[in-house]
Image 1 (cartoon, helix red, strand yellow):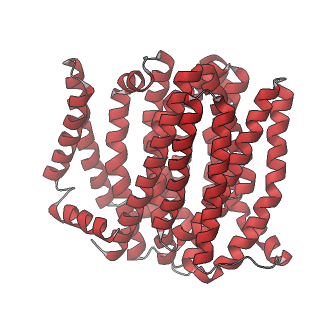
Image 2 (tube, rainbow, N blue to C red):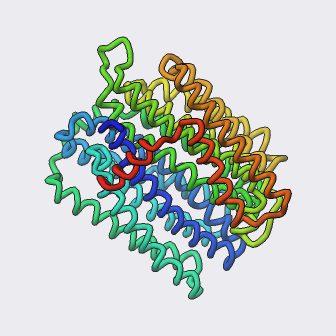
Length: 481
């Protein structure tokens, strides 16, 4: 395993484990909300977070991705970049908050609903700024510092938030706990930046104006991603009731921890791809191709068994987690399982394009995805409800994949990539046959899970996709981490 691949693997592992732990804490807290407060309150909280997430795409402005790309090339620019980006974000928070207030004001006369949305907005605003500061650690490939800050937030939000729910403080009590813990996490990230020698500075308006111009393609790209991933939930909450949103969110809560694995892997690859890219070159360097292949390998070996396994085990997953097999949530989860494949691949394709300074292509792809998602909201959600919302997401992911793949076919259409995909698909299909057979025999999940993992890894070993060198490289990577 080369040094570059080892570093990608190490940072991918750190970020993936961090995201998984964060999601585990969040899922347990959300389960308590769902069980103690019911599907309606669960749906209300999900709607509030989704609405705020869409609004906060404005101050996000794609600055996190931009920071990773630019600062990985020139870390000395971090001081000026982070300071001016923070000023820009602070300016944009106000119209984002007004947008949330306007939506609730004109769609509901419940003051408690408005207050909850405002509280969620403030918490997510603080969290977004904290995550943005952590982009610096990702850019310099010191991901353990980012992991520490974000795990601090997740751990203490869980430790103090769950008792607030159990002691009957409701959603307001939960959000106040999250507010104080998120504020502390933001201060922790600022303190770490100071430890790395970064300081606040003077605002240069010419630089700020240039930042707005440079970040515009990335901002539109981020906005369109949020639209095609979240607008269906907003529309679902406005057209249907909170219970329908709750069914949709039940399935999403299971699949989202799996979606973030791909984000962690490609985020770890972005700094290296950016460094390897030579803008004046008319072809891809070997280092760029090698990093792309290794990232693609990680993604394919993960997503194919996850997609097939989740599709077959959707009923069992909903029943196990929520204590009842809700039919609508099961159908939604099966659709989400299929969407994992284009979603995982899209993260790599967009990362490769961004590393090549081709934000316009990623923007075109996400605009297409947003259009497909909006059409899905119009034609699928009114009659299809939660299932229609899930289908609109799946179709949007497929549209984005087709466009981005057409832009990178010279990089991706290689014989070794085809054989890699074929081996992974063959092993995952056999794993699916094992799961189906054990289901017919009415085996328990405690038997199905290890049997599926064993069958998949064994077939990959026999096909030569996993070797002794991979195992030794993985152990070495863990030691270095």
